[in-house]
Length: 183
Image 1 (cartoon, rainbow, N blue to C red):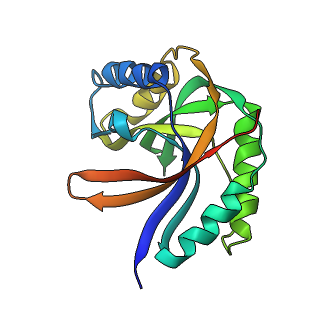
Image 2 (cartoon, helix red, strand yellow):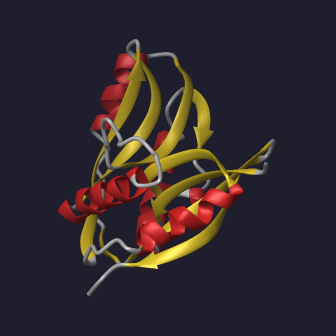
């Protein structure tokens, strides 16, 4: 049986992509090794489904079509890091807006009908950099925390079921279906 690596996400408008590019440029001046997220791959993951059987995609599409969440305002608010044993591993930008949590909960509830477990913890963020090594770890974390983020705001009008193909050159994302939010 064929499987497809899938996730459910929100895309970002050009203003967000430009701000991420600016932040990546600022971070590029720091002493660390890692990989910047490709700007064309930026998204906010609402739920990662993983490898699912191809014939289950239609069930997932059907439950996602039933989501009744209104369009909402979202915004970038701050930069931070995820750390493992005190070592920075991810640089992220926080994505705020009450509607994001409402949409994520609706997605979680819909996917539960298809046998997927609810998320234990959802942190609304977009990954800017995957850090492999930072010489001055504490200073790097503090530098990231102090980066001034432009308060970009936008209206979220849809979300997407995505296919993810992992390739040696990096992931390739394809839209399986886009779902509009209510007025």
